[in-house]
Length: 436
Image (cartoon, rainbow, N blue to C red; front, side, top):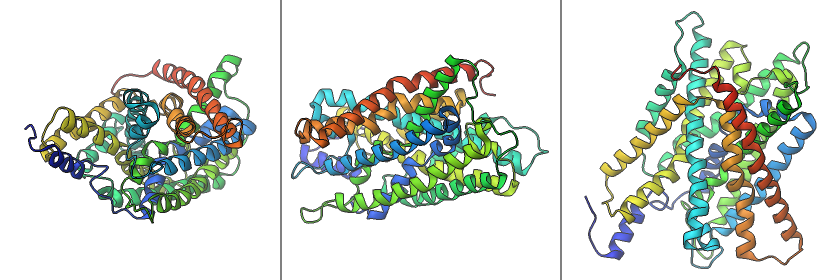
């Protein structure tokens, strides 16, 4: 199954086969709904819970600051895609290699990107299973209890089929449906919270009574917000699917789509975070839809919308992983690009994420741990570091200061928030039985 032929023919065949570079006919609205699907995922459901861990003042400040900072860094990513004349950085690690060097760039970017993509897919497996179980329990309250493990397996079975769609443009229909669903269930979440009005004896104080507990919860809340702003990891790969000429570079339609996506992100995130916390205070669950019970039909519908959305989100984050796996196998191991190779590698990946999700279904803890550990670098400060290296803004200029502020905030987020997330996982694991 090893591929043979001239190097130029081989390179062309590989590029026409790999998921990221096989199709460059995307429109600006593809950018919009791909970015919405990538960013508005499991994270939005935990934002009221993150607010309960942070409190009103810090929570509102960090939510708004994160929106501004990540909009700035995604603009940097879009600009740097074609910053070098005649060169397109189609993948995050290619940009990293240009900035840091061939070997160092790979070692800096690939582990971070893989961690973000794989951890996102694991969390989406957990979210899909949780939402399916919640839907079942709402529409059939008297039915026999079914373990969450089986619902995660049901959700995972969908991806054993969808994961064999070849590239980003082939999943555009799935991504569009997911983007519409994200707006729909977010609206249901905050509207249902308004319908509940403020709960009797609502408490906006920190849930933990001890000072160490408050600190750990605060750090976990930071990670949950970082996880919510996680779309940067696939920005260059999405932009790579767009046509580009010297007269009409891809950054024009890409940025147009990003602006639309970020407006939708604000419409989804801010009402859910603030109204959900306003209604329930520190009694809110780490998934707002699990807190809401009535009206039953509406909440059941919202959970199905979540399932549809995280199906699309899983595919968006899986595609760069598929591209990395397939690139390595056909370029380094010199396998022939073929359906069999894709079938085996992608099936194994889906199975891996499903098994990990079944073993460790700690939704809130996973969000905060991975949010700080991996998402903060790729979304908050790596673009700024690369921008400083490539663009070399004048020292102590406004641009220089803005980038360094983002870097400092991002590094603090990366160092501090996994501590709270890890503690949350440990606390949740004490009473957990595997495959329950």
